[in-house]
Image (cartoon, rainbow, N blue to C red; front, side):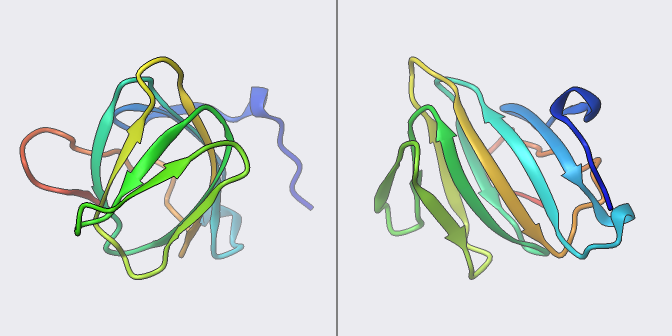
Length: 124
């Protein structure tokens, strides 16, 4: 059995916020669960080439924008799943942080960070 509290999980600066990786590859479960904060006013250009990701919003507001330019609002109680390794923009509201509980499959190592400079999608 694995039991962890948020106080015991180090925060990783992922590029535009903090991610606490509660479960990682080393835990042997095959998936990762994170508590991720996306800083207010940020826009992240992302693509997960090696992982599928689902995110459930627990606080804050924002949007996820697909490559056709379609925007999907994110608010508490909203889940979005990147089931096709979808390239996307993740945008946090200008006035409040966006907080997400995320599941990655397969599991992350736990030390991954994004490179958000330039016009390339940050991927891992």
